[in-house]
Length: 453
Image (tube, rainbow, N blue to C red; front, side, top):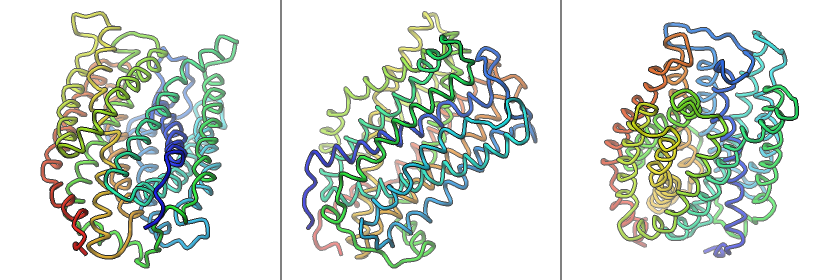
């Protein structure tokens, strides 16, 4: 048994999550908004705003390709990490090599070479987005595999997941302040596009610092059971999907990501079009969501240990259903629009907190169960497969979202925007049905039974 990870190292590990959450928050929150700009935004058009086959847009196709590439590289990177014999450890070496290009490509995604609508911008964006997703995978998949290896018991893994949930929200919350930052530069006389680029560059530089903290602070060899796997990628993936409980959970997770990505990527449209509020309200609401979720982190940690993670995730799905249905009626309710916005945050805080903590712990528990049963430690592949499926979900969500937003040929069309919330609700219901099929009792009994192997 390796050394127990001290609290200081747990915090150092969690700060890496702040870094990659900030970078992914930038892409997730502003990519569609930047490349399908509303008239009110003041953003130039850099790529053609055309629709193919009635629903496929250029930005939708690019993001779908990016997510597909991202998904494919997940099991590849997971296998390389599982099989790695680096002196620095199986995970840390990948995180170190990915950090700088990860931050750099985040900036370049918004740095179109031609100042106007151009096919060259389409090519440049495609290349930069593919590289962004590659380096995202190189950092995130090994990072999550460390969760299972640094936490030696279900309780330790739950605590680590709670810490990284906090830093995930902090990173996403900082990303949500980008409109405040770029409005500051606009007040200095810079154009909207230039202001956005400066703001996102500053945030990416901050993220890089946090990406490197666990790389230099954690001695993987000291704290992790690090036994390289000899399985090849396809064999490892097949072995992973043979675990029935993992299949049920990961399909639920896939559909969850379709729903949440559609909804989150539409938030700026809900705020600026449905509620007629300034874009700076996005940052205020996201900060409110983060603070609201923090209030529930400790109770969720305690309750999960008492009643199990599955029951809490079911509750979270039900909450999200209410949130999405409510989102479809924003701007139509007999309430002040600002109150409607804050009510959205209030409703979303609890399920966001639950999903922020528990899914990673569930996957870590399943990976531990599988390791005890088979004698082969493949934590990287379990987390890599989970992120593979989640990114497939996000890929389809971007295709669906861009098609919905431009379905009437006008990104400011209210009905198209409302349909994004309705669509998210439908997928949320499907995710709940898959979760009901997951047998948590079998997994927990397996990892507490010393004779399971």
